[in-house]
Image (cartoon, rainbow, N blue to C red; front, top):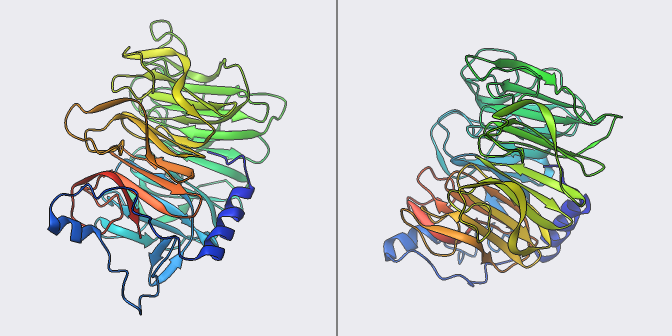
Length: 426
């Protein structure tokens, strides 16, 4: 997603540098009942020689690093750090952490990547935009979603996406990726099985691979700039500078806000009619959400109540407000059946919580939270959610994660399988 408030990063740096010791205030009770597991989650912050004691960000290689953005893939997480570095943790089965070896339970710097300005987490791949406007991607490349033009199955180190040098934001999807160019154009690459690349042609069968970035056809007009971009399961979406939302790809669950019986998928952008100024959009597993006049609207699949409304319909083609949620700073529809939002008065989540990913202390099979639960009381400025885990970044620079930790995706450095309430990542 393209950030609409460019002062946010500099403000966060100011808080980080001026406070320097934003400690977790203990608002949340430790959800782990076993004393041994509690010890696994708690770091010893009483060592007078600890160089990261009181760190408000992440302690990496004995240095305290400020976090400015958090993103998540299915079972991994990545953070944009000060000085343009990137750290990732969790599952590394396809090289999505940006390095060789197995999974990492704590944040590790991505090698060979400098001067990053924004990130996106795909299902099993990750992408970053750097200061020059180039894009780097790494991880799973089975459907050529890394955009390098080669047929390598996966790549553990960041490599340049072919032909991109003026990109403002990148969006990594399930098996495709998209980029917003400075001039207002959008290009996508990877799988085009259900038209998610936006080439105006796809029959929904067989192999449809676009190995390098290709311009999306029939988008906007008149050179309108891109305000926000998102790539999801088999759907893509962009918002232009006038606040118009276009989406294309899979419509099986009304993701394009049209009847699935009349339109199975679309290989060309279609306008999603919303009243108001649209500032951001997130395309998830099978549902979409957009911030309209600071209010969050969602539509699509609702089998696990991920649309955040009282209605128990399995799906909806009508964008409707998420209940009792306003002043949204950021949101994410993630890679599973839940959603989260960052707002001035905290972080909220709702939907599937089978692994505690909603963060209100509940977990277990068939656990569903139908309306937003406030899981963090601090002002939240960003959220990133995966298949069964969630993370939130506060205005003071602290990073919290919760949900499944079976691949180390919470960054806690412990072997605890899941945590049903937010935990400070240090």
